[in-house]
Image (tube, rainbow over all chains, first blue to last red; front, side):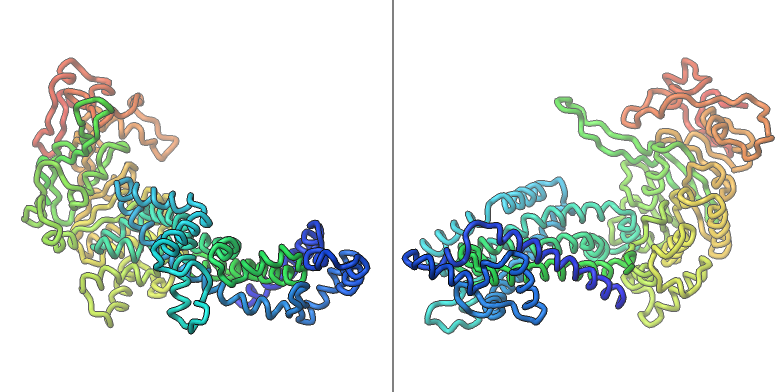
Amino acid sequence: MGPYLVRRLLIAVPVFWGITVLSFLIMNMAPGNPVDMFINPNVPPEMRELRKELLGLNDPVYVQYFKWLAGVLRGELGYSFSSYAPVTELIGARIGPTLLLASSSLAVGLIIAIPIGILSAVKHNTRLDYLMTGLSFLGTSIPPFFLGLGLIYILGVELKWLPTGGMKTLGGDGGFADIAIHLIMPVLVLGMTIAGKKVRYVRASMLDVLGQDYLRTARSKGLSEWAVTNRHALRNALIPIIAVIGAEIPLLLGGSIIIEQVFQWPGIGQLTMEAILSRDYPTLMGLNLVAASVVLLTNLLIDILYAAVDPRIEFN
Amino acid sequence: MQIERLSTHYPVRGAFLSRRDKAVKAVDDVSLTLYEGETVGLVGESGCGKSTLGRTIIRLEQSSGGRIRFEGRDITHDPPKKLIPARMRMQMIFQDPYASLNPRMRIVDTLSEPLLVHRLVERHEIRREVDRLLALVGLPSSAGNRYPHEFSGGQRQRIGIARALSFRPKLLVCDEPVSALDVSIQAQILNLLQDLQEELTLTYLFIAHGIGAVKQISKRVAVMYLGKIVELAGTEELFRRPRHPYTQLLLNAYPPPDPAYRRKQSRVILHGDIPSPANPPAGCRFHTRCPYAQQRCRVETPHLSEKEHAVACHYPLA
């Protein structure tokens, strides 16, 4: 496995580099520039030019890119154009909440999806199955922002059961319970969306395995239906599910951009929105790096996991 | 094991707006006795109900009529719990050894699972028992630590047989155990089955559509057509002197292995498809395809004669 890992990581280097080039170019093609975005319109044009010159914005794009790249190779992501804080610090402060939100949503989504998918497959073409499949269709069809706003209105504004947004109560202790209460609604929204999609995968994969001959073999050993379903069927059905979950993780980061806006969640998503609106190039590039590493790492992790759970797959 | 007038019908929902619900008569009024230590071959076209018969007699399918007696006891309507001891003594060898082993379980786990679930062997003795089973089917002890995909088809079928033997059964229903294998491997597996039969006094119901394998292993052969046994006789006798027209046609369809060999009689080819078991022809079920059919065959159902060479035909061949 060692050589395999090394090879995969080496392949990741050019991919990584390509991503940075592309995103740098696209970012610079967007109209407007950082100085126009944050400077008071009454500031005289000479001052703006000076500012641009100082920030290096008048250099050709490739010079700006290589300056940035040189910084990255030294381990520096630069300073935000809008807040002057180091980009690493900005991202560092925001990544925790996002990871918390994303991982809890994924966990909740799977906890809902896997049993429902199994049940749907085991009882396929019954009323229960139709109900479950119908609900999962509903789960994927409702846009998350709409569901989010609806929940805020009902649970937050009208019933006042849950806070309408944010991660901690202002002036509160910010402890575990406080964060947990703030987590409920966004996790519910993201979890529902994930569950809706995954139920169908689990059901299909499970149905596929349930038709396999080795389940008949398992039954002929005199195992209970429970053991047949869980020990033999589920373990085989989860192999393809792993790939689907892996593909979900990058989507989850993208999806949380909207949800973090809706629920005022202080995570990467919010930071990304702010950085885009203020054309904060260094912060955006830093966020791109984070996103790219998440995608590449999850892919690698999924491949390793795949080989670990399926004895038929070997590293080569 | 005695099977008396056994039937297995599957209900089929009637077509839209039609009143009557029909039934597919997969096995219809079949009687057969399996004596201890013998092999009865069961042949017939696909869809004739041979697998269903095999599954029904070990109660994997519920029969719709008739009786199944195993070791002197009527097990036709035993509830699942009561059935367990009998089930252990009748096991099944499955057709496709590529698909019938769980790909995520090592062989040792596949083989030890039934022993552990039914507490047949102490946990610390499991490995020894698994080795014994592997040795029985001619596999080394090291095979236990490997996964199914590391084995060839023949080896996997050996594992399938070892799996069936783990309960020390008396009756084995072999549902086309060699049809997925190469001919040379088929012979190996057949020899293994014969050796095991001698060693462990096993009784086989050997289901196949390949005539060759059945001829080699069976003591008696039953020919099935559309859910009914149409002929039942000793293997030698049946192959030398088939009395049912269907049996003759079935044997004719099997090409002689020696190309220099020329048949004395002209080959009669079987035409048409097997009729639907949901709506079998009246009278003799074979009359629609029988070259010798007469008026009586279209009206009156022939019954299996109670001779040593039993045949269900109004006008059996000489």
